[in-house]
Image (cartoon, rainbow, N blue to C red; front, side, top):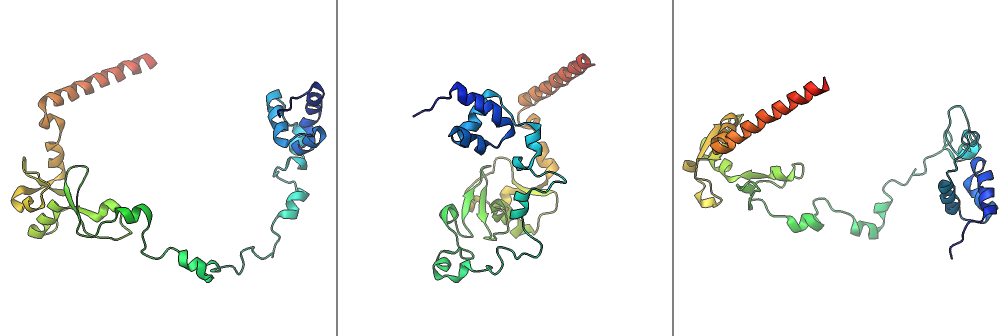
Length: 227
């Protein structure tokens, strides 16, 4: 049952809490430490500066050596608690049976695994092929667009700063239809120009320009007001 605080208990709490440890005050009152701390917080009581500067506070303070801390600290020359325990876990047969094996997959990794050579459609709508299981590579790097593989098979490595893309209106996710005549190698700058909203949709391009002009005017007026 809930035990309410009496006026006498509150008087004891106010008198001794600022300068005594919480557990000592709890013993005086026959209450739990959590009860003492909660009530002290509700009453707005805090520890005194003298208590916080003393060893009773349990704080690490520059230039002070608390006997309680000295008794439990590591002593110079003392052996480490883990000395001689290296590899002990693997000695027992029961532990070996449940240890993680190199190359082993469990959980979601095992459920989602597909072999090298598998195909998928990326979130951008491009057909990709898995080319490696190398665990050092980020998962997305293990997949390469089929269009790139087809182009490199016909023309060799792609020059730096260039990409392989589909000719306008020829994009497909059917592997048999991805042929060299559907592809072209262009610079990233050219790809950015083609995909600019102004070129993809003239009306949208004009709206984006108008939005930029409005934003510049708003920023100019805001700066004038700040000045």
